[in-house]
Image (tube, rainbow, N blue to C red; front, side, top):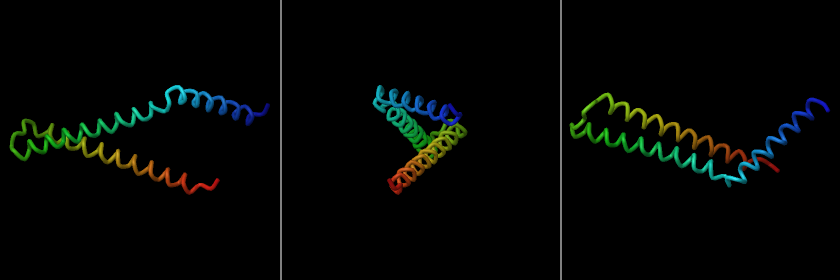
Length: 99
């Protein structure tokens, strides 16, 4: 058996194992992971809004912590938007693929 045949057989075994794992979980693991990531971004946005409201009303206790909360929320939102854009681009590319 040549090296290419060995690599193909190993790849096939790995793909079958992945397929079994997905069929056992029903693909829900990815959905749960995605939902938890979105919830985390939402929580950061809420903290940021609270920090901005505290800044506007003068009730801010620690300006540094408020700035950090706002920065984290901004960065996490940018990351989530980039992930969304990459997923949409991948979907469009799959749609353009000829069978």
